Image (cartoon, rainbow, N blue to C red; front, side, top):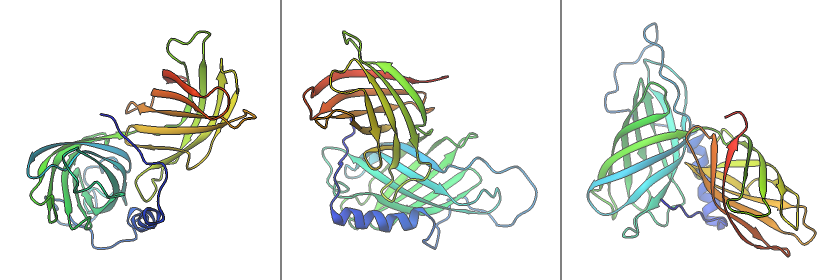
Length: 289
């Protein structure tokens, strides 16, 4: 699946991000309950399943209704870890739509709230173009996978439903190194990256860091600052400012595996300066993995 990100946001989008951020950080009320919510209370019993807070990608398989999205990705934030009571949970998910759908194409993010009780997850969105998305799922014993269903009521996607399979992605943090495939003389990249654990209001996670480049004629080092580096789900975009006197930037786009051990770059490109161009692809592995 090819994911396209919009790097520049309008002021309206930034305002929406701020609104969504309130929900993500647990400032909204009236949490919905999972389908099988039971009686509350605290006390002994089985330990609580791991928290599902983190960076998620939900693959969607539609089974009925108007065309909607192929996947959702972004920040899920579980408040609390009780095994017997409902834990208030919020989310900000971006939708990656099918070519045949316009129902969510203008949405910066879909804000949701609900709860996690035991292994059961129940989330319902606020109105997006008059549409309300409901997700009911079950997490596994590790808290890093979920399976379930979704349904949409209202708006142009009214009646759409299907199944979801979700995966949480580990932090893109550490030292990643590798060579641009087929380069001669060899062009290598060594990236030192740090991802925030807290997602932004539109569901993305910022990534900062530095880089050492070998085999490039215009520069040897780079710096990555927020918001020029980010990840959502398994897809990442990293734009490094280099030490090139003519202002070249290195733009890296790619994906990670769930453990964030491997960063697979589908594009290594230089923008600006005297050595601009597309240099190919690369596979970077984390030190110690």
